[in-house]
Amino acid sequence: MTRPFLPQPHDKFTFGLWTVGNVGRDPFGDPVRWAMSPVEIVHLLAEVGAYGVNFHDNDLAPIDASPAERDRIVRSFRQALEDTGLVVPMATTNLFTDPAFKDGAFTANDPNVRAYALQKTMQAIDLGVELGAQVYVFWGGREGVETDAAKNPVTAIQRTREAMNFLCEYVQDQGYDLRFALEAKPNEPRGDIYNATTGNMLAFIATLEHPEMVGVNPEVAHEQMAGLNFLHHVAQAWEAGKLFHIDLNDQAFGRYDQDYRFGAVNLKSAFFLVKFLEDVGYDGSRHFDAHAYRTEDREGVKDFARGCMRSYLILKEKAAQWNADREIQALLAEINADDGSTDAWKGAYSRAKANALKAASFDRQALGARGLGYERLDQLTVELLLGVR
Image: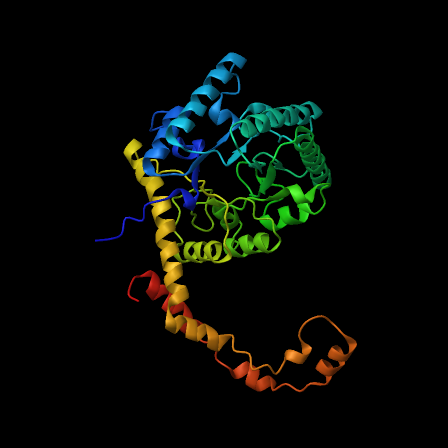
């Protein structure tokens, strides 16, 4: 009998209202599931064992809701959180659905659209903080072009920087305990989106007036849409101290943004991602930004949510097994063996070290002839994942 792999609060598994609340609409088909209210979604997530729920402003309160209606919805949502014990670790703003943002929000050519985007975001930040969010994500779904005749990319970068600097100052002025996380995507729904990868975002953050407030929110599918290795981008963000949040799902390379259940496609990639997060001690939310298949009813949506969390926990156990596997660890020790012969050249530069290294003799043929054992190491990893080790 297999272990239950049941999620616990310390796992910090979260879902967005838009994920389990997805009604199954796509560009070629109408909805197949009825819309759930935010309260219903909170109770569904509590039923499957999630830790928290995240939201865009208009996932919770419709964009055209009256102040009284907005307050009623928020009260009901807050009560559902109290009743279930779920928390809101992250919030974000929808700056891509409404036709006003068809040319972008912060990068729109129309200054009135840019001003409205700032207004909407400040109000959404207020709502997120009100409900407990400590991370605020920015995904610029419309911040791009179909033709470069429309915008100068330098202007777009400058407009984005101006908006982020303004919003950082707003958060500081309000005294909020809030950090920003920027989410990259190469394309869709725009033909091309600015700051297309996590690497782009990290470079952009360094140009801000308050870079200490701003990190990244990498998403599996978004980096894979660009044909990139997601783990490498997560590692770069972590090493830079900028991994403020993460979106977990799955994706076939070269496809549209599929948002599949975590671990549904690239199992080995998912394994090394989970292993990395657990090995380095990442303590933020594990947020599943994914959708159930369009074939599913409400019970299928629960299966989807449970599957995301169960797959993560199984891979977490596999990572612990990998770290404890004597053959794997012995092979790693052999691969990374250091006889101390290069110690004199390690560390900070000095002229003496440089001169000594320039004068050193290396057996180039021997270096090139050495087998590294990576085939065996990878096969052992595959066998462990297949459950035969």
